[in-house]
Length: 348
Ligand SMILES: Cc1cc2nc3c(=O)[nH]c(=O)nc-3n(C[C@H](O)[C@H](O)[C@H](O)COP(=O)(O)O)c2cc1C
Image 1 (cartoon, rainbow, N blue to C red):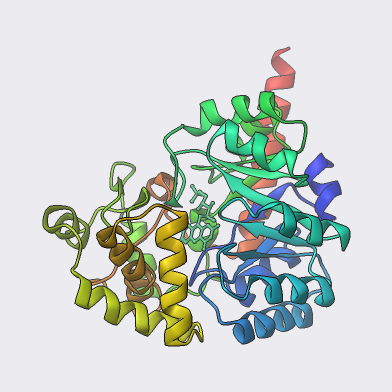
Image 2: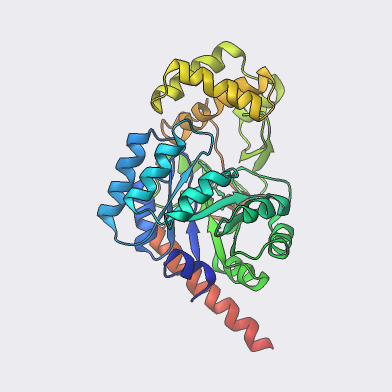
């Protein structure tokens, strides 16, 4: 199947495995690339050196194109962007709008720029800056997410911009891909479906909890870091929602722990916190929550500590009950999509 997405990324199938912090390392990304989709390394939770190693590992495991997801407000973002360029990474993905300067630098070097957006006006803004494609993530999606459902976001973003739109938020099978293509999207991006594969780096005990979660088992909460985030509803979330912010001392301790992991010095940590507070107009208590969030995710995803951590996920988790390989997911989604499209054609 050839779509504007397969052509833009140089991959076989119009399926993107998104960058997911603590989840999509080199193993999942390489497995997706070898399965014919676009795999994306999540580097927001990696030090610069870890990102370099992850890129090296993917390049050792495949000669197929892949992407790297980054935080635009990372202090070393320029260094990361330069490394993507020199190492020949095909796609740069961003959770937030990357800014005109970063878009230009990457595009001048031939790197495909693809931010994730959750509203048509955000798509218009990044399209004006010259990005090559957008992932439009509807409210059903995992992690930080907007309020517009996928079924309304996709047509409005398609109407708003002229670049390839990759539909995301709640996709888990080939019927979803067929529907997205019929809307006019160039492909789909999936997070939760790829998180629940044998190639993802999440502990098996944590995968088991996800697999038991029903379609009604998730919630969007601002109690984690001040921005709406979809997670499995657990006791930890109920406590966070009823007790409010975890308190400044714990936030500072968690922020220091996380920054140590990502190689940030204390002066840089303070500078980053103050810049975040100013740019995102956060109150001190929101800043404290934001500082806590990465460690709350790491606690579950990496350390398997289900009693203290959080479980980011899309609503699609309720429709998933198997742990195939990434390549098997891609093959099955493609077969189902082709079947669904054939069926509709036979009716016309
Ligand atoms: C565990 C988890 C971690 C995530 N981390 C990131 C991240 O680091 N950067 C990012 O841009 N998006 C992140 N996301 C969002 C996904 O990249 C993707 O857009 C979303 O999962 C799509 O919706 P779906 O889960 O319904 O497929 C995360 C999602 C999950 C479930």
